Amino acid sequence: MPAGADSPAPPATLATMVREIARLGLLGFGGVGPQSYHLFVVRTRWLSAEQFAELAGVGQALPGPNTVNLAAICGDRWFGPFGALAAVAALTVPPTLIAIALAALLVPVAGAPRLVAIECAVVAACAGLVLATALRVFATIAQRRGAAFVLGAALTAFITLRSADMPEATVAAIAVGFGFELLATRRR
Amino acid sequence: MNGALLLALALRFAGLSLIAFGGATALIPTIRVQVDATHWLTPTGFTESIALAQAAPGPNLLLVPLVGWHVAGIAGAAVALLAFVTPSSVLAVVGARFLLVHETTRPVIALRWAMRPVAGGLMLASSLAVFASSARAWPAPQPWIVAALAVIALLTAAATLRWKLNPLAWIAIAAVLGAVVPLR
Image 1 (cartoon, each protein chain N blue to C red):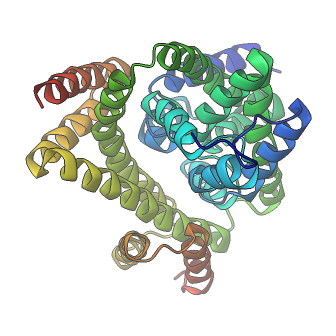
Image 2 (cartoon, rainbow over the protein chains, first blue to last red):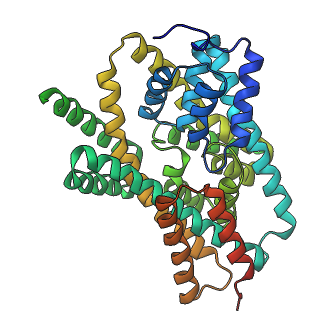
Image 3 (tube, chains in turn purple, green):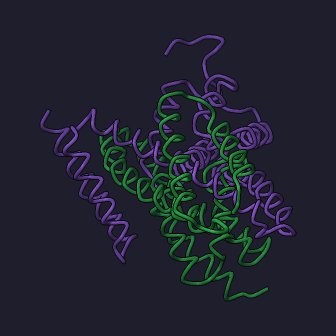
């Protein structure tokens, strides 16, 4: 790693970390994933690009919202368990308060046909955004394993979701995939 | 405040936390089934919560505290959020300590690729469930409205994949369409 003035250093204080992560939560619309690289690597230089890739990779491999996982891992790294707690709270509590404030504002007009129409149209657009995310995920997998694998995996996941024992089936599907990946990468 | 209700919220979202591959978005179908079974929210309230979770800034988990808020106010929101982020965050911290200390990147990479098809499948099912919530909550459902909502969804998906515009822009466009469309 090139040493120098711009080599990464952990946040100086817990308060700095909390402030910056809270800012990340409040600026990210439609998910904070893309902005988290900018915060950790470019803006604050708390992590090098390699460290970010490594930590974000662990966060993505485990269940839970990716950026919340990343915040927990970084908070723990820099300030121990209390740091993890502070980072997760900083990322999730302010946006939650905003969402609840909006919901509370809408209570007096709840169920008004025009409001419901606007909400339905917004939710239809949300369905499109989620669909786009799913297709991106499948495109990435197709590049690595081919279209047949994607089809099989998607079907498995879909059936998993429809099954009554969804948590158990999800874990089982991931365990099977994990074994497959270990075998597939060993052979090469 | 109803303690049993808060406990039910806590248990439900703590259980979902450890299978939230892809965040709360992947769990929308499951949350919807739960909400319908318990009557925690009306279909309209659930649709509104999805819309607000998307329109507000922040990580993709705001649906969880919003459901909690509808069920039991601020205490419900706090319990739902805490229950949802605690198990996965603890696992992330412990997992990262273990995985990074051992410098074994191969299992991490394998795990990442193993969860991706599952996350993709969950997302696909989720987009259908989100769409169903939209069509179901419309004031006076008619075939042409459902078709129009499907067009909004598909155009948003196509446009998101084609141009890297901020998702908020599509949300805003959809809101304007919803504001001007005739209701009868």
